[in-house]
Image (cartoon, rainbow, N blue to C red; front, side, top):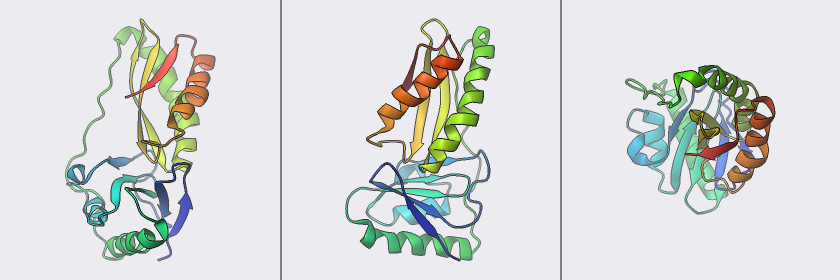
Length: 185
């Protein structure tokens, strides 16, 4: 098994590509701390490495965020853990998954469908290339504010605010006139 690595815009996060499906198309799992990794044997194993602070699974990649230290010392331990997990054939996740809670008025269902379509087709693929994901959380039809949750390398990335404001907000406002702003939750 050959695992490639890619840098992300977040210097504290590195993307690991095992050359096989991780979560599958459209599915993600975010573990912002060791306490949240209970249902994933691989996430639990990665959090046993003291410098690991966040683990994120995408369609065909794993993003790992470090607390401190140099990647050249941390990378071999992560590569070994990922390789051992996949060669042993262990499950990625155990048990039921958490449902994503969304909030919006039924009156805004058509606008929300447009927003979700744009996020799914234009935003998520670009963000996944950087080792992260963006999840729709809600829309307030009165104020026009879209709430999004950033995961993986996007969570805590120094450029995430710029991505939200200059990229996602401008695009949504262009295609969906009801949108006035985007906020991270």
